[in-house]
Length: 566
Image 1 (cartoon, rainbow, N blue to C red):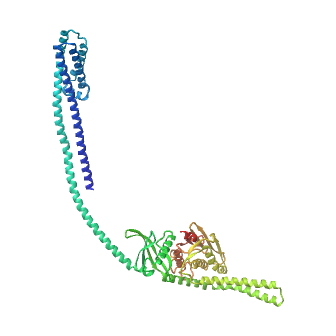
Image 2 (image 1 turned 60 degrees about the vertical axis):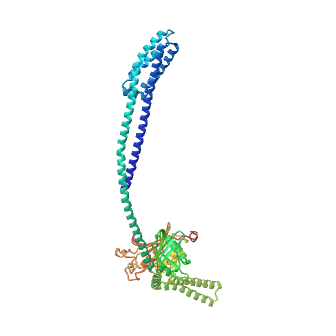
Image 3 (image 1 turned 45 degrees about the vertical axis):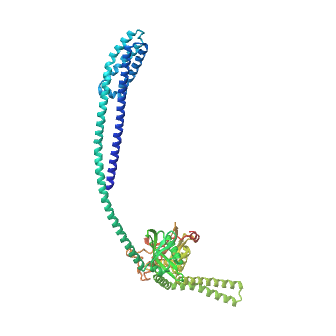
């Protein structure tokens, strides 16, 4: 700050001295011009007087018409040269300096009278000579006055020039002294600033060395980290860096095709997560056909001075397999609980088949019509198809979920899950109201079988919530779904009395249950939250009216042709 201030002061003083020099130079020039003009006026008047006096003397000694005309001309010239002495500024300056303004102005009228009188001088030479001689005495005081003015002008001009030089030197002395002082101080400060800047430069170089060593240490830490770390160039999605763990996970060469495939997949998953780059979850098929589950995050970093993307991934294949096994166990447990209802549901078509076969045998024994027998056989076929649907539903529900996700119809998945527990609800005397205000082509991303398990778990929990209540009143569960912009909302609501506050606080924690009974493993809601989060959604629970309501918010997947265009 000080060098800048001193620079400003020095420059200001420099311009002040320069301005002062220019001012005094201009003033001296103007004064010189004014002195020259005043001296010229005084000299011209004195010269005109001498010419007039000489002409009058010549005319007084040699009176003639020519000499009279010459005297008249000289008097006119003298009168004109006297006017600047009292009409112009230089002349006024001379008049003020000598105090003879009025005498000079008075001679204007005297000379005017002489000029007019000269026209009346006749041919009488004696009279003209006497008249011209008398005029010499009249203008003699004017000559003395003009000489005084001329001498005073020269003296005053010389003195004013000397005073001006002295005052100019004095006026410039202080700015020059300040300029010298500020310049000297500025040089000293600049020297000190240069030394300080040199020290700062040394500190910066030392800091750069520390940063370089820190970067080397950080790079060593990244290389030794067991987590896969990849730096991606957002301009072309190329790989700028991979650590050892990433090389072992995918391929040691960053130019391998698997890296490009993984990069594109990870970026698509991150962008589909509504800006939540901290939870990137995907499955990836390696070149050898192995399918691995990956979870991590994506963030913006500055790598080697350029904006890059850092992809951090952890191989969660074992955890994924464990979760799938746990989900499978939960599904099998649910199937075990529903075995009675499934057996009852299968018994109905079997009973109808048995009755239809007995009637067909009776008709055949009695020679019945073929059309009636055919109708009985059609009824058998219908009931067989019904039993097949039940068996397919059980088999589909009980199979192991796949490791890769895909887009699926949300409406179809909800209908399949609801159909799986519908008979059980009927056997328990619970009314299941289904309201699906979503189109059949509305899709979400995930694994359909796992999502159906979430809906089944919520419906089974709602069924179990009625176990402790008296069956006298009508018991109802509502399953609703509706679109909400780019999301889909699914609600499972019951009127079983709600969830206690202490259970609500830890409802989605492992080994916590919303049921007062000892049914279940306590992992259903924790797994449901994990599944919904993997689908980039949310699941919440709250008490409403006479029961509880579980709400799922899922992002709607883009149609296939839109994704391909993007």
